[in-house]
Amino acid sequence: MFNKNYLSKPTKNACLGSTLIGMAFGAGWTPCNGPIIGAIFAMSASAPNDC
Image (cartoon, rainbow, N blue to C red; front, side):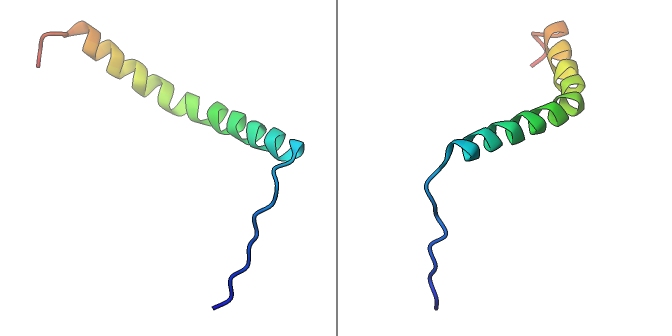
């Protein structure tokens, strides 16, 4: 088998790109899961002793 090492040193642009991708992922994730998490919190706050 051939083993090639594709690892490179992180650069400033790579860190910036990772941050931007993370922010874009968070911006897309929040509208989808925000209402669901809000509903879970509301249900647990309205009935705290219903275990």
